[in-house]
Length: 256
Figure 1: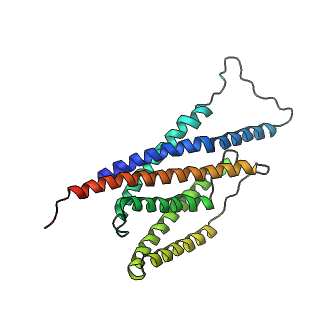
Figure 2: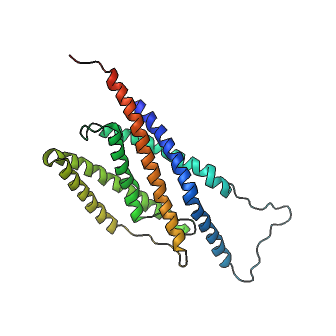
Figure 3: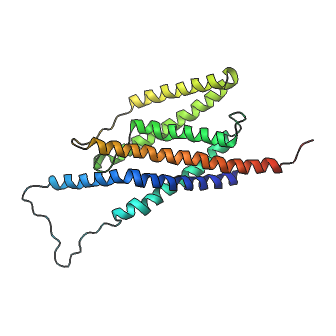
């Protein structure tokens, strides 16, 4: 059964990745194109007045980009988001197998939906609020490493605190009830992750004069892409898992 859930999780992740790619293409890529144009304009305006551009010597081939912007925004986008969706789907199926049956008598669809919602908040939304994504022309090349480390470190921290809060809430639910236990666990997560966010360094490298509308559109599209991804993953996997688990229960030998 674990192998069945894993395969269905990866399949659901692929479906979610394709849908997220379509959303990102129509709603996110226009702001990326705008940011790239602004980056090129800024680079041109910062060139020294009177400086002569280097012209390739005779026989010297002009430098060509390895991957065109058109490929990046279509095939590259689909490949990246699709592989991400498959990987997340596989991990999601493992998490589902662990929590299924431990949250009471919830149906697989409900369990998958709750898990997807929680994962969206813990894995993406909370880290995004601290370290939001930026389009091209925002950020300095020399700080890419530190910014990446801070972001993924906060993702790992949020995930760890989320798992501990869920485990703690499950124990409290046995004593105080599911509603109270869940509220206390959620409150504990918010407090701990809020303190961590306040202690971690902030990153603000948006250059002066960068259009706020472009930045807002890009970040809104980033959130929307993740909403589509996790919603599609939860709904698709929940449907597939319920069919698989339903067949297993139907074919299980009856006791007595």
